[in-house]
Every structure is written in structure tokens, then in C-alpha cells.
Amino acid sequence: MAEIIDGKAIAQKVKTEAAQEAEALRQQGVEPTIAVVLVGDNQASKVYIRNKMLACEQTGIRSLKYELPQSASQQELLELINILAGKKDVHGILVQLPLPQQIDEQAVLRSIPPQKDVDGFHPQNVGCLLTGGHPLTPCTPAGILRLLEETGVNPAGKHCVVLGRSNIVGKPVSILMLEKDATVTICHSKTKNLASMTRQADILIAAVGKPKFVTADMVKEGAVVIDVGMNRDENNKLCGDVDFARVQEKCSVITPVPGGVGPMTVAMLMKNTITAAKMQVKHRE
Ligand code: NAP
Picture 1 (spheres, helix red, strand yellow):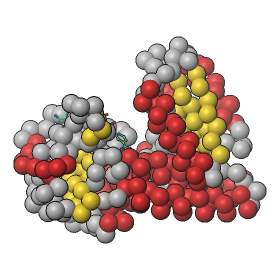
Picture 2 (picture 1 turned 90 degrees about the vertical axis):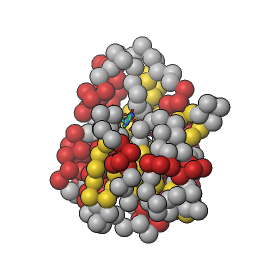
Picture 3 (picture 1 turned 90 degrees about the horizontal axis):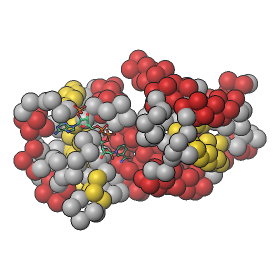
């Protein structure tokens, strides 16, 4: 039976670290603050924002919520971001994705000043990710790396197969694993002979968005399996991209869903907000 990574416990550890750093900032007269922006009435987005704001509360980070209607124009959103960008007492700006279709997501992400981009999605921060020295790393990939580190899994020299090439998970986690000296293969919907690829993985990271997509026959004996997926199964129960029950009998380490990668994403957002606040304080000194 595999070791099941307790993402909740590790996320708690990260939040405790962030809380200590938040307190240290307050001692210097700085109240670390994040502005979260929700456009429209996507129910999942509302839940994500609630979780993020709750984590802020637990960590001692001030969170300000801004809501725009589903019909909001791109211009309205850009104006709001511009106001938040100019506020010295706002250190992080997070625009919850997805955005309504009339709004160009990339234009919005580009409008957030890179030093306040706590999601790490601004092209400048993405560039830093590629070239090294990236203080604001996308939260889910950063959370995955921390899970591996806390579990004592060293990616160096291992073959890491990443399923998915999205900008928020697949691509950035592949770069981070490469930075940790793993040999990385990125798979996607056009990959041929997928199972033959995944069976080579010492570390398999699944970010596909399909319930129980990764079956036991796709996994090498003793592999480390990280499940990023957040899906609903046929009974509307939350499940990952991995067939957990079967795969855990074959692999050495696995993350559950829920309670694996999910809590880490929120915890790393707290870390990024503290990092952003520290950078801005330093810049003003
Ligand atoms: P996404 O943007 O939809 O990307 C999915 C990726 O999977 C794409 O690159 C796609 O390939 C690939 N894919 C789809 N079908 C495939 C197949 N049959 N074989 C191989 N690859 C296939 O999704 P995402 O935003 O990265 O999210 C992935 C999952 O992680 C979702 O369940 C999401 O809810 C979850 N998630 C969780 C967290 C968390 O905090 N736990 C954070 C973010 C996302 P193409 O590029 O070729 O289309």
C-alpha cells in the first residue's frame, strides 16, 4: 500500500510559516493585503474565493473582495485592476478565473503589476519561471513541489511524466521539475501511446481534468503519483484524475483528492502574498 500524502497537514505547516511572516511584517507596520476580484456568478469560483479568504483570515493576511457582475466589460475590470495596482496598501491582486467570455483573460493577467501578481500568471513572472529566480511561482505547481519536498521525494535524475500542458498547472510544474533536475516528459491530448509514456514515470503528475483517467495499468510499480485533478464522479463526489483505489495498491506514494494538492494551492497563495508584500516593502526602502 502506498504512503498517502497528507496535503492538509503540509498546507497547515505552510500557512503557519506564512502567519509568522505576516506577523513579522505587521511588527514593521505593514499589513499584508490581497485583493481578490470575482467577475460574474460562477459557483465554483465563489467557493474558491471563500476558501482563499478563509485561509487569509487564518494566516493574518487582510483580504479585500471586489465583485463585478457577469455583464462587466473588460474596460471596467481593467479600471478596477488599475486602481488596485496604484494602492500602496494592496500587495497582491488575484483575479479569479475563468472570466466571462467578453473579457480577454490574457489582457487582464497582463494588466496586473508583476510584483502584485500572486498567482504568478503575468508573462514577466512566467518568463522568470523559465529563466530562474522566480519569487512569485504559480500556486498549484509550487504546492506540488513542496509536497514532494516534505515527503522526501527528490526529483533529481527521476523521470517525471506530466499529464496536461495548461498554463496554470502542466507547463509550470514541468519547468519546476526540470529545475529540480528531473527528466521531464509532457503529455497532452495529442500524445500517442499515452500509457506507454506514463508507465515510464518515476513521478507521475496528472492534471487532465478527467475523473479517474489514470488507471493502475498506466502506472509503474513503486511510482510517486501526484493527482491535481478536481472532478466530480458519477455520484457527484469529488475525485481526482487518478483511480485512487486501484493505483494506491501499485504506487509508493500518492496524493488523495480531496486533501492532497488542493489545500496546497491555497497555502502557496498565502506564501506568495507575503513574498509580494516583502518585495514591495523592500522596493520602497
Ligand atoms: P486544462 O486547462 O483543461 O488542461 C487539461 C490538459 O489535459 C490539457 O493540456 C489537455 O491536452 C490534457 N488532456 C485532456 N485530455 C487528455 C487525454 N485524453 N490525454 C492526455 N491529455 C489530455 O486543465 P487544468 O486547468 O490544467 O486543470 C487540470 C485539472 O486540475 C482539473 O481537474 C482542474 O480542476 C484541476 N486543478 C486543480 C487545482 C488544485 O488546486 N487542486 C488547481 C488547478 C487545476 P490539450 O492541451 O492537448 O488539450
